[in-house]
Length: 358
Image (cartoon, rainbow, N blue to C red; front, top):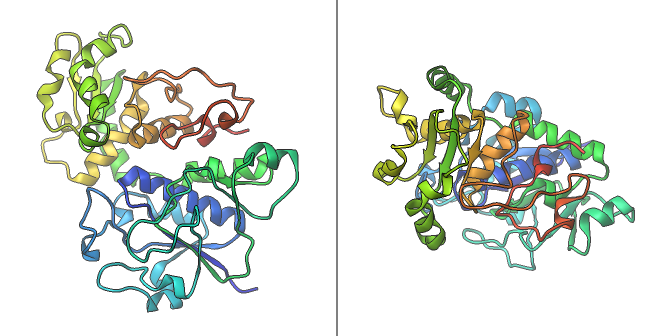
């Protein structure tokens, strides 16, 4: 039997939007038995220029390549002969529509380099349509895309902006749990970032952590972000043990925003612990790994960075703070009922389904 392949160009967003693409592509690979073609480099917001592929992100500067290839059935982009014919000066997947079945959502036309609609309206990717109660409960009235096709190559062009557990249907809980476990084991930061974090843990002892998203949120969620930065002291009042160190993961460059907290907490940032300047990859990884070990972690509404920290905590068996953060407090869910059958789904929330076995 000849190999079949799935490839993807990650969503045009920041790293955690793209992490979602990696998770969803890995889930599809497991479900269909297709070999996962790993992108060589790809555009990532904040990490390069979208018109110059030489500046694109090398994912293995962030992820542990050895773990990823151990857990998933992978092949490098340039090890697929047909993929060596692709590409132009701007991006690596130019021409993919000539050799692969490209999955597009909401009847959106194929765009070689630019925006392709994500499946955020609720599309479900399945490997064979079923008529079981499990299938109906999971999919509801969402539009279904069948992945059981004869094509040698299937491809997702910058549109896998999706939570795998919501958009990829495994036909029973055992398959869904297997997908979940492998994603938890296989998508992790490089080992040297954990080594750096261990230095921090030794110095901090028991601590709490918050994630304060600023940066682009000053534009896309301006009102929420202004309130968060101005009212942070009030928002945290009575929620954290003031006798414990407080680690702040943030992209806010002006640390004076946090001066109002100094009378209540001993504050720490990633740069507090090192006598050298951390690069952008080290900074990204540390601001995920360190809060994931905190006793209490409170994040920022709408942020997939906060979501990623909660995912790491979930897989590690830490206390779940995905329903409450600095500026949000969602009602608890019944873990025996599918989350999106209890409230309207949005990609801007993370659900325990990401890490909790059924």
